[in-house]
Every structure is written in structure tokens, then in C-alpha cells.
Length: 283
Image (cartoon, rainbow, N blue to C red; front, side, top):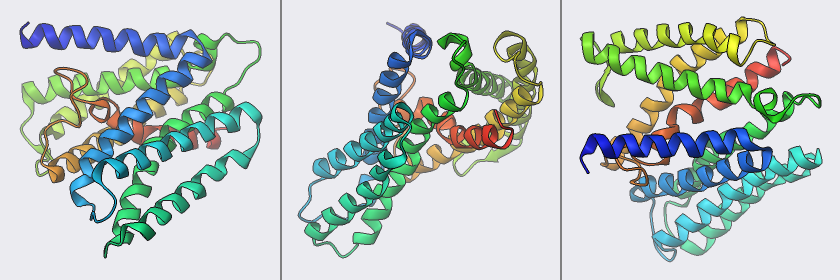
């Protein structure tokens, strides 16, 4: 199978799985992002493994501990929404305690560095995906169906990120001359960035009619800016991690498309901003 067919088949399967998980029910939504959280946390730990100092705790043990803590934090957001009790968010300090306890037994002279890497993994992967449950809860409407009523903002954000990436790639390939941040992502250009933003803004008006017609036009426009600016920042950040780790892709689960972090790097960065945006605008 040639590269193009492999990439196309992977993209189709990925789209089907994502849309099914997102649109079917809250249960499939929860399961989908639980699996993505596990994959993202596992890949993150693999990428930062070379920066951790090991002694009595093995590479694999660290990876399992940090991934399981990310699952615990993700589950805590789900349970918070399910029970409407903040007690479940005690998983956050519990993870910090676990990371600290591990370092007590590791006997390394860089324990603070190890703890910081583990804590950042939770901040980078588990908390954004956990916030998706709070976004759904903020937009709860007892009279609306799950789709589009409960998940329209999240689906809109994903579509705007995809449009931004597509237009940025096309624009950069055709007229890209001035590099955005060549030290971290040599292929990105300012021309591509601007064209990507224009594409996202144009798509916002279409999405507003299709998915977000219950809101003012300001929401899709703001989502488009978040997708273009914050999403590109998230992409650059993951490129920075990969460059420091000396790898091309975060993983190999999706042939021709990389791993979980390669697919959701922009999404991870945008989720907290969208959550704050909804709080500010009282959505």
C-alpha cells in the first residue's frame, strides 16, 4: 500500500472513530477521550523520558505511574460532572502526593525535575481533556439532544482547528516565504498562518449556521481565533518537545499521521481557553 492510500485510509478510520465517539452519546464521548488521554499521556512520558533521572524506578514503571495518574485526573472531572461534587477534584493533589512518594524511593539527585515533568504531563494532557466534561456541563440543556445540543461547541472547535491546519498547509506550500519559528517547525510560515486564520474565520460563518446558530456570531469568530492562534501555539509546543526528544512523531499508532499528540496538540492547547471563554461570556 503506497503512502497516499495509507494516509487516506488512516484519516477515514480516524474521522469515523472520532465522529462516532463524539456524536453517539455521553458514554461514547467519555470513553473516546479516556482512550485519547491514555494514549497522549503514554506518548508524552515516552518523549520526556530522556530528561528524567532514573535510579531505583524503571522507565516503564514511571510511564505506568504517570499515565495512571492522568487517567485518575481525567476520571475526576467526569465524576465531578456526574455527581456535581468537587470532592473528586482531590485527585489533583493526590497525584502530586503520588509523584512525591515515588521520588522518595527513587533516590535520585534530581527529584524536583522528575516531579515537575510528571506534573506537567497531567497539566498538558489529562486536565484539558477533563475540562471537556465541564464544557459539556456548562452547555447542559435538558431539552436538547446530545447532538448537536450538547457537543456542538467541541465539534465546532475541532472542525475549525482542522480548517485552520488545512488552509495553513496549503497557503504555506504555495506562497510561504517567511518562516514562523524555524527552530521548532521549519515548514510553518507566516503566510500559511495568516491564510489558515482567514480560512478558519470563513469557516466560522458556515459553522455558525450549521452548529452554533443558538449563539451570537461572536462565539464562532472567537473560536476561530482560538483555533488559529492558540492551536498553532499548541502545534509549535509539541514540535518543540519532539525536537528536544529527537523524534519526528510522538507515536506510530496512526500510519502516516503520527501519534495521539501529533493529532491533538492544537486541541489540547485550545480547550482551556474555550472553557474560560464560556465562563466569561456566560455560555
